[in-house]
Image 1 (cartoon, rainbow, N blue to C red):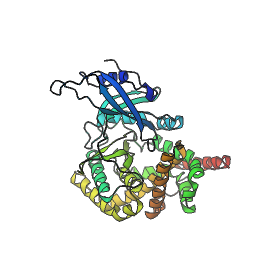
Image 2: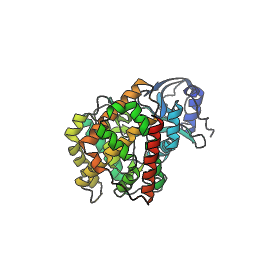
Image 3: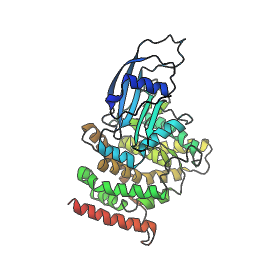
Image 4: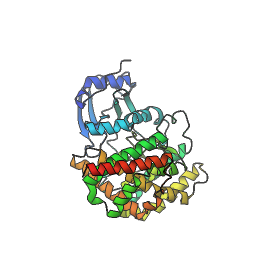
Length: 399
C-alpha cells in the first residue's frame, strides 16, 4: 500500500494526504475525506514537536452497520518542531525515533492508556517523522501552572507504577532491548556533555532563579553526572516514560481512575524513580508535594510489591527519589539552555518548572546525593576533568 510523503510543514497535511495516511494505517473502507481543518495546539508546552488537532469532514459517512472502519472526526498529527534549534536537540538525543517505536511496538501491550496510532512514518536519514494519533480532546487536562491536586497526583503515580512494575528488571525483552539505555557509557557521556554545553546559557537566561548555593551545586554536578548515572544504574531498571508531566497526561472525563499518557519520545530504559520524581517535583505545586510525597511513595512501593517485585523497600524508594532531584535539575538545564523559548507561554512553563525543581533539590538535600570526586586516571575522572576545563572555557568566552 502506498505510503504518503512525510509532511515538512503543517500546510502539507491536506485532505488528500490524510486520506492516504489513514488508509495506509489500516482504515481500508474509510469514506473520502472531503475537507480538513487544523489548528496548532500546545504552543506553550510543545517544545520538540509541532502538534496539530485536525477536524475531518467526509463526503458521506456510511451507516454504522455498513462501515467496518471507525472514521475519526478529529485526530492529532505530530511533526518535528518548526524551530531549527529544537529540531537539532531532538535529533541529537534520538527522540523522534523513540516516540515512533513506542507507538508501533510497545503501546499495544503496555498496561497504561496511550493514543492509538492511526498512522506513523519515520525517515532515519533526515530524522523526519509523522504520527497520526487518537485525539483525547474530550478528556480532562490540568494546568501546569496550577499543578496536580493530591488525588490527581495519586492517580498519575498509580498508573506509572503499573508500567514500571510490568517491565521491572525485564528490559532485555525483544521489544524493549532496542530502546535507548540511559545507563550506557556512550549515553552517559552524551548527557554530561550536553548538560555542560547548556549550563552557561541557562545561567544567562535564568540566573536570577539560582541561589549562590544552587549555582555552585549545578556547576559541580556538570563534572559528576557520569558518576551519578553509574551509581543509579546499580538499582532497578524499567521502561520509563521520561517526560511524565501534567502536559502529557489526560484524566478520564467521568472522574474515574483511568488516565492516558501521550508524548513517548523520551521513553527509554532507566531507573523507575525518574518518572516518579519528575512528576512530583515538576507537576505538583511545592506545598502539595511537601504534604503528600511520602504517602504517595509508600503507595507506589506497595503497588510494585503487589506486582511481584521483591525486595524493593520504602527506604530504597525514598533514596532513589532524592537522588533523582538532581536528574530533574539536569532536565531543566537542557530545557533552559538548549531550547528556543521565544514564545512567552513556553518560557513561563520553564520558569515555573525551574522554581519547583530548585526548591525540591533544597528540600530533599539533593546535594548530599552528589557523588564525590572520582580518581583522575579513570574514564570517569578524565571525563570530569575535561568537563571542568571545558566549562571554564565556555564561561570565559561568554564573559
